[in-house]
Length: 234
Image (cartoon, rainbow, N blue to C red):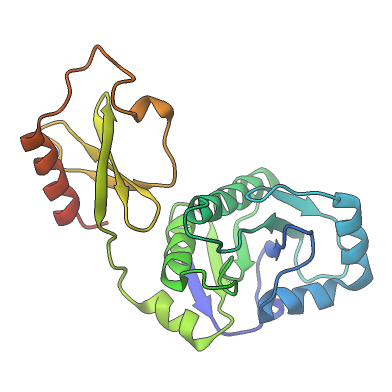
């Protein structure tokens, strides 16, 4: 299950806490991250020093005694640059990395802030939706400590489905469309199916022309798939 609260993250009960890091390895801005960093104190600074480098989008576990959590997971999160530097995709990968590591550690519950939600012009609605969608796909419990009332309100707001910008191609049973928020819509092309999904990235084989054995989709068929996306409730 997924929960959102304005409470201090240190007051939450969870098997693991997540601390977002800058590219430099320092804890990010935001009340939740800074409170966790202060609680970690010198032990956290030493552990971060031993970590040295963490690629953006990846995660690692640190041994920091004294925190009210069995595990401390850190992840290097993206800043918003131009919107064309795969920021939303990298944010997806942050959550994927965190949850994969939590699974390895045997965690059943996680507490964390909304990653990248306090960076320059990062689209908050997308940041919150990516967080909630990623948490929904994990089988454990996630509690997000919202830094602001705005983040809490966004977490309760119905998500506005992004629009299709362009058709990319198809491979086997799925067509792929580029979306207005930097992600991709994957739509099942089988006539008996009306299924769609959002994915953060795709394999090169989706590019049209990479599989000459498949007949290109007609404009009529592409239009039908667009309508499926527009009507499908995620």
